[in-house]
Image (cartoon, rainbow, N blue to C red):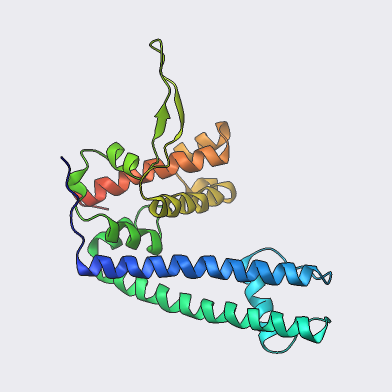
Length: 229
C-alpha cells in the first residue's frame, strides 16, 4: 500500500495561490474572447495576443470606445473594466508567488532548469512533499502523465501517446514552459541544447515539446531528490 505525504501549511498556501491564478487566467481569457466577439459584430477586429487585448481594454475603460452604438459601448466598457481588474489581481498573486519562490530553496533550484520559470517551479515545489516516494525520474514523469502508453504484442514494443494521467496542472505548466524553450530554439538555435536542435530537425514541434517536458520532469525529480541545480 502506498501512502501520500501530507503537505505542509506553506505548501497548501502556495497551491491556493496557484489555483486562484489559474481561475483568474481562465476568466480573463473568457472576458477577452467576449470583447473580441462583440466588437467583431461591428466589424472591429483585435490583433492576437493578450497584450493587444489589454491595451484595447485600457482604451475602452478610459472612454475611448470605437464607433459603435452607445448601448454596446457601455457593455464592452464594463467587460473591459473586469479584464483590467483581473489583470491587477493576477499581478498581486504573481508577486506573492515570486516572494514565496525567493524564500524556498527547492523552488529556486528548480528554476535553474531551462524552460522552468517561477510559476512552474513554485507549483512543483508546493505539490511534491517527498520526492523519494518515486523510485526514479521515469516514475515521477509517469505520475505527471508524461510517459507514453505501451501497445506491445508479439514481442514488438510500440509506444503510443502520453497517458495524460496524474496532475494535469503541473503537466500543462511543464509543456507550456518547454513550448517557450522550443520557440527560443527556432530563433536562437545556438542558445539551446544541441540535442533539442537535432530533435527539432527530425520530429514535429509538438512531439518534441512533450518529449522535452518528459525529460524536464526527470530532471525535476533528480534535483528534488538529490539536490544540486
